[in-house]
Length: 260
Image (cartoon, rainbow, N blue to C red):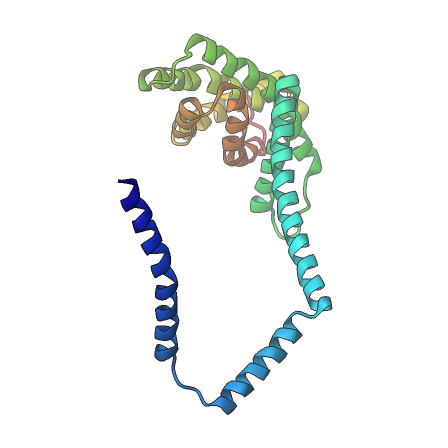
């Protein structure tokens, strides 16, 4: 048995150089014919091209550009991940302050967008109005989001369909009226309206706003409660609030309601 293995191994080793020679002969016979002069010219042209392509200056510049491209792409990706990790870290250490600042930025940007949409040709940007909206996000909305979403997460910790619809109902019946009512009252008080005028504004604007919100917020809340973790739900809610706040700031900018 051992003798047969050694003989087979020896026969295969001797046959391998023979196959190589036959393969090289086959390649030479199958290669298309080219005259010797043209082959010489092609060889000279390839030699010149190869030398010109591998000059030290061009090689170094190409290598430097490649390094810069790689370093720029890595820095851009690292900067994006660094910003995200920084935000998550700050959100963990100072949750209320981070959520408040995020809400203030989103509400301020939404008011600027609302003014750009409704602004007339010769009117100017109302910076005081933008500051009022940002102040509402900073002082009221950010802490309210933190308390509300943590409360809902404790009371209804599951993420099944039945629990999600319970959260939707709680949001529409409790959280929505409180936030929208607080928004109209806060904005009207900063504009110097009296208590009777604020009551008249709420009577005129709050119910239509809540009814319009039924066409927007249930889907947003469903995605928020079903998919997003609790500590990121205020940020998602504020992001959805961007479009909604454009409508809210328009409603808040209407003329004051006269009490009856």
